[in-house]
Length: 158
Image (cartoon, rainbow, N blue to C red; front, side):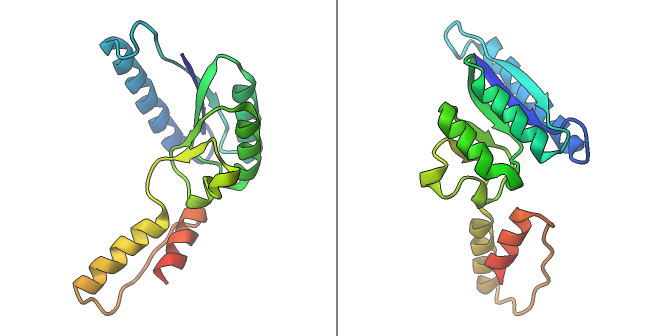
C-alpha cells in the first residue's frame, strides 16, 4: 500500500519536513515489521515541496492521480488548501495534514477528503482561557506564530 507524502525536505521549512519524513518512515517500518496489515506492506513516496505552495499543489496533483496511492500526508499548505481540497475531492484520496489551522479542513462540506492532526487553535485558546480564569490570572502576554494557525489562536484568545 502506497502512501504519498508531500513535505518540505528543502527550503525554509526543511527542518520540520525532515523530522516528519523520518517519523513517517520509522512508523512504516514498524507497521511492516509487526505485520499489522495481514501480509500487505506499506511504502512511502516522499515528494519535496521545497516549502513552496505551487510545488505542493503540483505534488498533491501527481500523488492524487497515481492509482497506487491510497492516502496522502502533507505538512498542510494553508495558502493552497482550497486547490488541494478540489484535487483530493475529485480523486477521492484521503489527505491528512500534519500541521494546519482549522481552515485547512473546513468547511467540512467542501473538504470531505481533507483531515488534520492536532487541535484547532480555537480549542487550544478555549482551554488556555479556562485555565487562566480558574487560576484567577488578570493579565497575560500572548505570542503567536506569523501564520494562519497563529492568527486563528490570537483571534480566539482575544
